[in-house]
Amino acid sequence: MKPKPKIYITHPDPSIEEIAKRVGVSKRRMNELIALAAEINKSMAPRSTKSNGKPRARKHPARTANR
Image 1 (tube, rainbow, N blue to C red):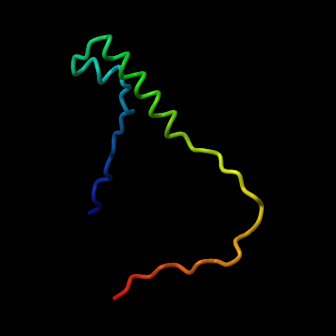
Image 2 (cartoon, one colour):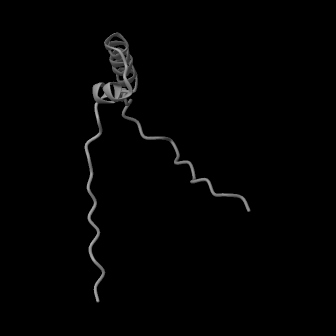
Image 3 (cartoon, rainbow, N blue to C red):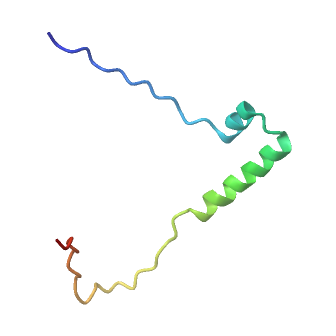
């Protein structure tokens, strides 16, 4: 007898506004939270790195755990 297939239901992540409404945050505080979240997202954005085009002189060996 085959086991029944598992069904996983996923829900999209709620927005900051939805979470704030659930916990009862005031509109003023919600605006502050949105501003903080935007600042954090901006600071965590990937930075572009400039490559000088030269390969490394030598490749470092992978570290192994000492036993």
